[in-house]
Image (cartoon, rainbow, N blue to C red; front, side, top):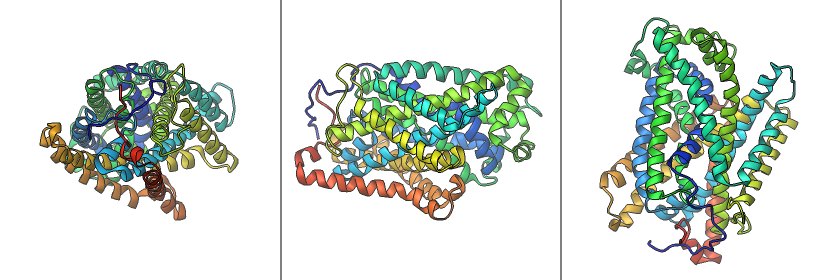
Length: 482
């Protein structure tokens, strides 16, 4: 288990290019904080448990912090850009690694391309207000082109752009939060959203799923292990900081949104809106003025762009590693001679995004209700499946490597508990998939079934690799040799 994979220095990701701050902002931007607050939170409140959504955010934040304990413990022993795939390969074996690699490629592609639909629709709406009327898919294609250029180049360029965008997102929402806090909201500040009666009201299972969807992206810290400075320190810090920053931000903002509308008035207010995603902007008009709302509408679009760029970087690295380690054709697993970026994998992702967006445009399907809703829910299911796999992989890895000298609470108890929690959440997503995604009938079964199909394809690819190259199969997920 101490062996390392030989690799020519010329075919490597750019080492020592990302510090704690850069990785933190890369993964926070994937979570798209403003998008989650403006879009996911009102919908989660409406379809889930109303004001109790803030308390649900607290519960999910604690669960993800518990997951992070085992996740970062293993990150010190698995420094591979394959992240979940590498964890599965080293903890559960190469076949599980292959299955996880394909689930990752499916999930992050689905998330990136799905968000392209919402980005196109939101940008079309923004520019229509300025007298520029273009179809949603035009803006999606423009975004695909910009992301393609940035993904092809050095990763630190993307990190710098994402840092600026995320800081702006936080700033506008924090201004609104402070305005609501200063005025005391609609009927005074109240801790009711954190009461058990509020948390368990309505449909708490739906609320939990919306909360998890808002966090998707934080787990990507380990994807940048090969590009991080001092990864054994940088990756754990970035992971914990990301969970705390995202979780506290969501929880406090959801609480103040409920207080701002009035805890008892919240659900009627949401039910009275034709589009619940305008709820945050209405609060902004009421408490902070229209100038902030206008800035927020612009930053909502930039938040979506930051998200698609971050997910593009993530999926490109999964495709690259799968090629480098021979699960996929080796011609995919190469880096650019100058930028040391996974440029071939980046191009593949960009082409795939263009094809899927083009297909939805030609078929006349709605960019939000179809493209965004269907694909992002598939992605959420896939990522939570990988979290469950990673939790189990942590337990099995440290059982097989007792010399790793990690605390049993970190390596067995907490990962075991989070594994069970994620299994329950997977069940809730599958049985509620139609309600969450709006996909009924055949699609309600086929779309979540894509995760299983991806796992089977990955299993077959890993099995084929084991037959033709046993050495490469045994090396799946190993860290590269310096």
